[in-house]
Structure formats: structure tokens, C-alpha cells
Amino acid sequence: MTKSQTNQYAMMKAAMQVLNENKPVWENIKPIAVEITDMAGLLAAIAAEGQMQYDSQTAGHTNRKDRALETMNSLGFKTSLKVSAWARKSGNEVVLAATNFRKWEFERGSESEQVTRNTTIAGIARQHLASLADYKITAEGCTALEEAIQAALPLTAVRDAVGSNRQAATGGLALYIKAATDILIHLDGLVEGMLEDEHRAFEDAYFAARKVHHRRGGSVKPEPIVNAA
Image (cartoon, rainbow, N blue to C red; front, side):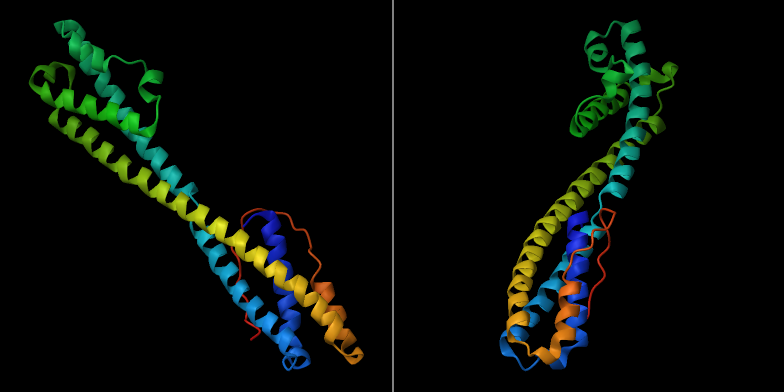
């Protein structure tokens, strides 16, 4: 949840708590009871969407993906240095053109481009394995690079999927909070206009809870509430 959404949700929970504690005051007033029932459902939906958003933080997946790419590029670049040295010495211009990179060149580009570059290096190294023995290119080294490439691929896909889920939850939250806010505005008028003077204490407590208290902080895990109806 954003800071603003956190503040709005906290206010809504506080208002619902006052309503829960004073149910005998309004439960037989149908227009109010209907709005509160709808409000309880929306707050449950907000809690669920907020939980999804909280669970779908991409930072952990991004860190794992970055480490996987770093491992892949490190192995790939070392292999490219050895293969390009052999290609230069043997006069193999085709292989030299495909493997001759400076470090910053090797690591640039999109994730897909980096994976493709490393896949090319691994393929060339394995193809010329017999000729590269003096340059310390081994079958085990080729396998290690190939495994690093395979490790990087699914992490990139998972990170993108988790990010998509988080965006969906963010959109859902905005819609639910807007709907809940509209209900509260309608409920304000009903509470003020339909309750007898003897319930003034409840009315005052309700409108005090309706004030948004601005809190510091960004994304938080939403705590669910007990439904009023």
C-alpha cells in the first residue's frame, strides 16, 4: 500500500471499529445497515488485495535474478577471454568477432541479450573444446556456464510475473478504496441525519474516527478487520 492508501485504510478500520462497538444503535436502521454491510465486504477485499501486494514484492526476486546474471556473466566473460585469445592466435576471425569483448561491452544490453551472448560463448567453447585445452577451457567449465545460463532464465521470468501480480493488486486496491470512500461519504449523511439525539456520543465517536491521520511509511502489510455484519 502507498502512504495515502495506508492512511485511508487505517481510518476505515477505525470507523468500522466504532460501528462494530455500537451495532445496537444502527442494526435496525436498514439504510445504514446496508451501507455498513457493503463497507465490511470492501474492507475485506482491501485487506486481501493489500496482502497480495505485500506478498508480491519483487525485491527478493530481483536480487536473486541479479546474482544469477552476475554469475552467468562472470563465467561467460572469462570464457570469452580465453576463446578470443585462441581465435586471435589461430587466425579464426569468425570466432574472434563473436567472442572479443571488453568487460563493459559483455555485460551491456537487456537480460535477453546477455543470455544470448553467453549462450553463443558457451556454444563456441564446446564446439572447439579440443583446440582450447591449452587455454584451460574444459568440458566441466562449459557445463558450469551452461548451468549458469539456465539458472538465470527462470528467475527473470518469475520476477516479471511477480511484478505483474503486484501491479494488478495495486490497481485493485485503488478501486476498492475509492468504492469504500464513496460508501463512507454516503454513510456520513445517514449517521448524521437518521440517528436520534440520544446517540450523540456514538455519532461523535464515528466522525472522530473518520478523520484521516497521516502516518509515515510506504508499503505495509494490511491487517484484516472483523466484519461488522
